[in-house]
Amino acid sequence: MSIDLHTHSNFSDGTMTPTELVALARSKKISALALTDHDTMAGTEEAILAGTEMGVEIIPGLEISVLYGQVEYHILGYWADPHNSVLAAALARLQGARDARNAKILEKLNELGIPVTAEELQLVSEQGQTGRPHIARILVQRGVVRTMSQAFEQFLRKGTAAYVSRFAYSAAEAVALIRQAGGLAVLAHPAQNDLELIRLPAVLADLVPAGLEGIELYYPTHSHKVKKKLRALAGEHDLLLTGGSDYHGEVRPGTTLAGGGNVFVPPELLDKMKERLRLRG
Ligand code: AMP
Ligand code: ZN
Ligand code: FE
Ligand code: FE
Image (cartoon, rainbow, N blue to C red):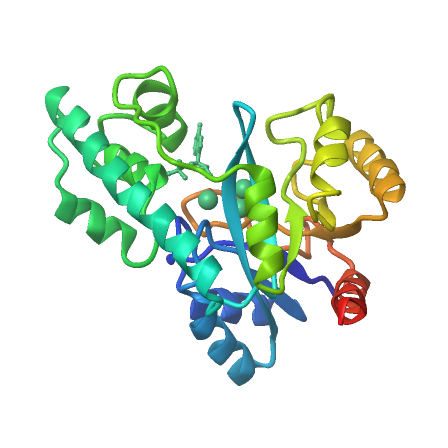
């Protein structure tokens, strides 16, 4: 039996509702599931209700997109209190920055002769956070591009025609936000923008003293070699190990929740995370 500590719902750029995600977890015999939507905890309440009904333990979570220098990293937070006023205000600020940016991206697309309206974007986004992946989906639906990756390559990534930057917290700020809200801060998919983990030792030397308490070890794209390096670094810094599928629903064909043929995440990890929280008192 596996657990899954990294998933997205339609409260960010996933396609399933939290309830559908929990039902899928149950059907896959996943004992514990963390909902880690980007920059929002708005889906937590629904997930917990569904989890209680279906007998799946739900860990409240989120995934904050941050900048470390010029590089984008993602910080996962577990058991942060969504009602914590400092965290809530920070997430509201991020949503505001996203809304302003989305409007500017649509303006640029309009200028390029691709009219996408705010209403259309809202329809695709459904609820919660709205970001570039939603705009990418519209460009695919329209037949402007064939895939979401192509939408990023041609229009949405830095250096392309409809790119707009937005405010992001630094990694250390996000770690502090999660901790002051009572949560555990974990570095997500450390190899995503650092394939050989060249920068990671320096990043950890900086973020662990700032309050980072774990790294994501089990992840669909992590090779044996990457995992070996991550284990060694985790040992050096006494970091918790976590893992998950980063499932986004059917928008990413061929992906699924943890367990079965996909990434396996040992349930014991969760006990160690809880123990860490208990020791904090
Ligand atoms: P945003 O948070 O709105 O800036 O969008 C960033 C998100 O878009 C990332 O977290 C990824 O999930 C997704 N993304 C970034 N680059 C690509 C790409 N080349 N292809 C598909 N999705 C991407
Ligand atoms: Zn995402
Ligand atoms: Fe991520
Ligand atoms: Fe994610």
